[in-house]
Length: 378
Image (cartoon, rainbow, N blue to C red):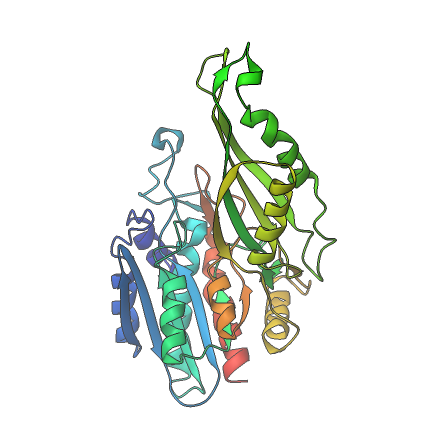
């Protein structure tokens, strides 16, 4: 069994449902310490973060970024095998976190060990940053670590995130940015009353619907470079007492905006609240700023990644995209780092019977190793 496959199996077997790390980072830290890395554990609240570094001097700083936490399994009886007892069937490794993203984390570790063995006096610094708070609230994970780095002047030039980015084959897609995310919990207040006497009540459903419809239909922009247009999606609406003869006194709606660099969170909040006020709503809204958009321009990192991925894909250049959700790179980019995402096929992430092809997994360390060599020693 290959080293990366064994390490992935060992990590999957640790039930690290966010924000629990379940010993994954300790296992990785011990390995990298033996390879000559300096290890720093940064624990905030219930969240574990690992910062492992190798190298010194004024050269470029290359960080591999990942997470050891996984999403809940859902109904275990729906899985063909126990999600935390990894199993290989027909050349495919099954288990929670196989693709998102314990396979990439294991490949990072193996690639880093190989890199410092081959290049013990490499220029610059290579580092691994791991958190157990990527799948959860993302408060005490990389967001908090980035604040620490900012305070102590920790420089990062390039960041490679191991999120599962590929569509059909390893290396067929390169993420060069991500949209921002902004969530709202909107409460619209009315006056409860009997449906037969609407003049003595104020229906928050009737009042909120035109405003929500306007927000949902709004064309925010036409996109930005490789970013799609900004999108607002209403994800939940709740109102009523359960009785069909009662006008409710309150409505709550949840919505989210995924936005490109045309906007920042404060601007979108202002735009949305202007619509709510124009409709005369009595409301309150709680905003959660999940992260601003980021984009890596053409340069050494994108060029290296494009060439390396093309070699792995038999010469075909990868699609370069800013699609998908968010990643922890949104907290690293504001430090001045150029960020990309490269990882395995994402078709099964967060699903029952999550999996990764063993052949892809065993190629991942070479992919990351080649990227490190291209950026730091060539």
